[in-house]
Length: 298
Image (cartoon, rainbow, N blue to C red):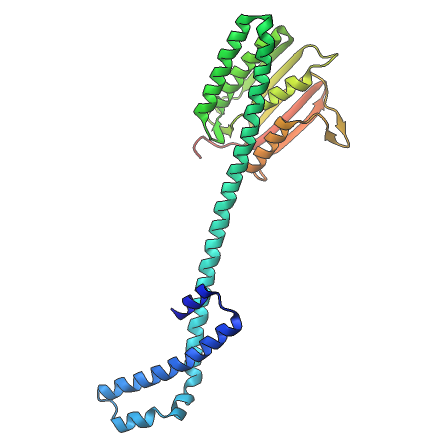
């Protein structure tokens, strides 16, 4: 009780040692008198023997033994409380790290979704003058996308088939806007549809491909999406035949918010177990993501 009280008061170590030293002396006298008193009460010792046995020099003779017991017990108690406190701090740090990580992920998603919505609304605005029917269809497609987004809620990971549904709805929006100037191919390996992937991980890649793929000499754009298993990993490849990546000092100058957002989210969700790369390959701009295969709910 004394040790716990002194720990809660956060007393300095010099004062702490002094208090324990004085208390050990008091306790030593107390134990000595009580133990001899019990022997006298139960008849194992006469009163004269009690007075003789409780003289100061006899108490001092066993003081070192009492000191050893007292400080051994005190050290064990301190070790227990420090270990208990250390374990609590570790758990608290882990809890706050999880909160911070989830907060950062939510902030990244909050950046991503308005960015996607604003771009889509701008596309619909352009369509209004060209074709009111296409504009209406785009609004319906966008509303379905938003409905799916609300359904998913705050989930960081979703089944691949839900992510593919979102991609297909977004592709419909792009086809309405670009007509025959854009084409898509999607291939998903059987057995992967129930695996978990980050929410809205593919759509920003399509958005980035469209935004940076069209150019003066690139008036038509083909976008291919391929998702397949590779051992214990899933590999997502999105490639387009648009404007090649421009690398300066080994860095891609065309990388924007959506791509950086994806990298940050992957870093949070799969630390040290994912890969992300962008490169030019025989007339194609390729984005390759590799992440662990995880079944939904695990």
